[in-house]
Image (tube, rainbow, N blue to C red; front, top):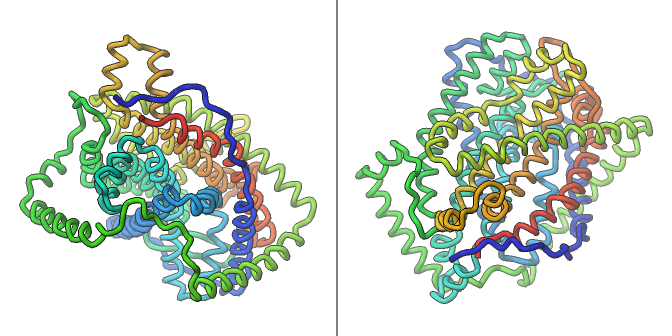
Length: 570
C-alpha cells in the first residue's frame, strides 16, 4: 500500500538565492528597459474601434473573447508540458528554469502591459499588435499555475511507479503517455479550469486599455464590460455578466466537466469509489461512432510514434552537455547586446526617480504587503474546508462545483466599481474593497488546488483511515493535510503572485469619470501609467518584482521543497 510520509522535516539545505537569480534579474531589468526604450517611439495618438453597448453585439463579442482565451490556453498548455518536463528531469536546467518561473510569475502583468503594448505598436501594425498583446496578457495569467502544477506532479510521482517503468524499459514517449501525463492529468485539468477562470479576470484589461491619448481596444466581452463600467451603465454591466455566465455554463458542460470525468480514470487507488461525478456530454462522446473512428486513428499515430521514439531510452533526457552550435552562440550574443541596451535604458529610468518617489514606492510596497497577507489568510480560512468538502462529497460537489466554476470565472474587475461605491461609506472603505478584490481574483487558485489534492488521495487510504477510526482533527492531521499539502502550496504560490498583480486594479479605480485610490504599490503603478511616467512605472514595477521574488524564495519555495521531499505518495 502507498503511504504518506508525514514525519518531521529536516531543515532545507538548498540556498535561498543563487547566482542564477542575479543573472535572471539583470536580464529581466534589461528586457523591461529595452521595451521601455522602444515604447517611447510609439505613436502619440491612437484610437481603437468604438465598443457598442447594444445587446445584439454581445454574441459576437463573446465569440471574440472565447477565441482569444482559447488561443492563449493552447499556448499555455504547450508551454506547460515542455517547460515543466525539462525542469523536472534536467537538474542543470532546473536550477535556471524554476527560478525563472518564480521571476516570471512575479512580474505584475498589468504594469508591464503598457510597455509591451507601446513597444509592439512601434514595430508592428496596430491591429495585430493589440491582438498579440491581448493574447500574451491572457497567456501570462493562465500559464504559471499550470506549469507549477505539472512540475509538481512530475516531481511527486511515486518511486515504485518510476522503477516499474524502468523495469519494462519504456521509452521516454511510452513513459510520458502511460505514467507521467496520466499521473498529472487530474491536476492539469483542475488547474486548467482555474487558468481559464483567471483569464477572464484579466480579459477587461486585455481588451481595452488607455494610456494618455493612446486608446487601445478590441471587440469582446471584456471591452463591453469595461465600457459599461466607464459610463456607469449598470444595465449593460448586468447583461454583460449574464452573457459571460452563459458562456461559462456552456464551457463547463461541454469542456470542463467531461474532462474532469475523463481525468478521474487516472487516479492512483486500488478501490473504486462508490460515488463519482458524471457528464452527459462525456457519455454521449463515448457512444459516438465518429469519436471511436478518431480514437482508432490516434492509436495508430501513437503506435507509430512509439516505434519511432522507442529507440530513445526513458532516461535519455537532454542534459545540456552538448556543445553549443554557432547559431546558439550568435543568439546568446544578440541577447547580451539587447539586454545591455535595456540595462542602459533601465539605469536612466532609475536615476531619474527622486528620493521622494522612492519613499512613496517603498511605503506602497509595505501597504500592499499588508493587504495581500490579510487577503491570503481570509482566503485560506474558507477555501480549505470548502475544497475538502467538495473533494470528498460527490453529491455536494455535483451542486457546488458548477457554482464555484461560474463564480471563479466572473471577472471581479467588472464588479469592483460597484463594490467600491458600496464600501466608500464605511471607514477604510477603499482598503476593504482592495482586499476584497484581491481575494476575488486569487482565492480560486487555492480552492481549485485543494479540490485537486483531495481528489488525488487514494480511496484505499480513506478506507484505511475509517478502519482505524480516524475522525476529526486526527484524520485531518494524518491524511487530509499531508495529502493535499503539495497542491495547497502550488495554489498559494500562484495566489500570492496573483494578489500582488491584482493590487494594480484594486488600489486605483476609475468609475464614471471619477478616480479612487489608496496608498499601495499597485496604485503607484496605475497612477504612473495614467500619467505616462515611464521612469516611476519602471521603478515601481521593478520593486514589486524584487519583493515578490524575495517572498517566494524565503517562504513559498521552502514549502515547495518540503512538499516535494516529504509529502508524496510512496
